[in-house]
Image (cartoon, rainbow, N blue to C red; front, side, top):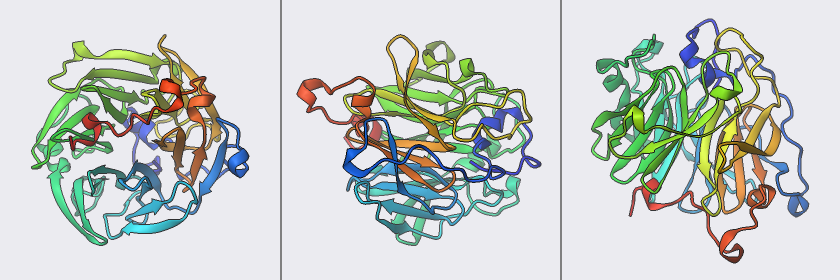
Length: 361
């Protein structure tokens, strides 16, 4: 997410702001050629989004993307790239970071995560989870900023309402990562907020859930060493720090984690760090990568040369990668690109809509 480095200077927040507005837009991954696109090669699906960040797959199979600059949620047809406004009027980003930052569905109902719009950032709106009631009507179901202010973390911070990053539905509610307060919050459907698990300065980002296990991407602190870019796991219920298990590591600035086809786990690296630079400095342009998580704790590169990616979602074996410069890239045949021809005779379905994740079964 973009932000002016003069405002945010703490290392704990650095990895969240790496896709900086200070970096000019540069062409992303190799453009494909329709149905002839090779597995693992990205083709441009959509451009022109503003302040794009997180997204989610709706019940209709479309991708819904949060645009923090405009306060909109945009629906994108993953086959054609056609766009339409799904919701408008949500809080906008005030300082280049935040506003509406992520989208998730529970059944037919959409929810939006909004952050960095409260008094600690010079605003007067609520940092929290918003239920989408109509094209321009919303209900705040959880005030995450107020909870964070009245329940401060043990780690160092300077925004007392935190910087919430990712929204993940689970049975009975939601999980929310906070990359500034270095923890994951649990939120019930009625809006009750509690701390699920707290960390040191690891900068938690993307979330995925399967089989009552939470998978978390860690961007890591400055200088963003590849060894600090991790996917970890822990139990969905009552986890402690002793329950955290390293799943894979080796690429810097992980910003998302998601299940693809056949239950294969993928991660998204925002890119290579320039080194021991001031907090808030951008990653190297065109160095982002979609990664497959291997059983031996390593990653395999599926697609490279992505420019400032922020989130990834899957429709069967197609990955949809959102980038901070307002683009969505479509990567077909991801399972084939990763060496997985598909279990169950190639008829297995994506694991990204399991009961533990969407919370409606």
